[in-house]
Image (cartoon, rainbow, N blue to C red; front, side, top):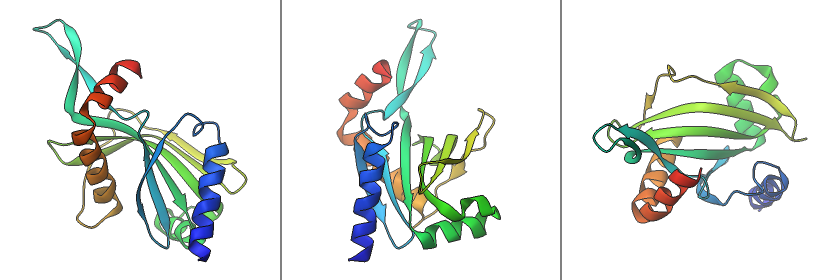
Length: 167
């Protein structure tokens, strides 16, 4: 019951935050450490230039999306241990712009924003195109988000095409 209350409070806080106000978050996974969502309003395909057609066209094998992760206290503690950075001790949620390649089965992070319980930015990182993608690992958080986004894209292809040209 305590965990359900924590998740509900987190969702209310997220809905009041600026980045989230226009978002439509799709739940992916939860456990005692985190809850993951992706934004259905901004999910899109990457545009690639087609020299033959002389225009940019959507590449349905590369999907770009915003991921929202809500952390419980044990989740924040785990992040501190993993990163070795005490600034994450009050980590409450993060937004990450990610790209997945369906062909290579990889994920790549581009923008990362980490916030505390007071909605204060803890850390932000802007990564360039040289950021190395990482392979999805079976039964990992990465695989859960990869599979959820892939499945959503398969069933909402037209929405992703529309978002690709709109975003």
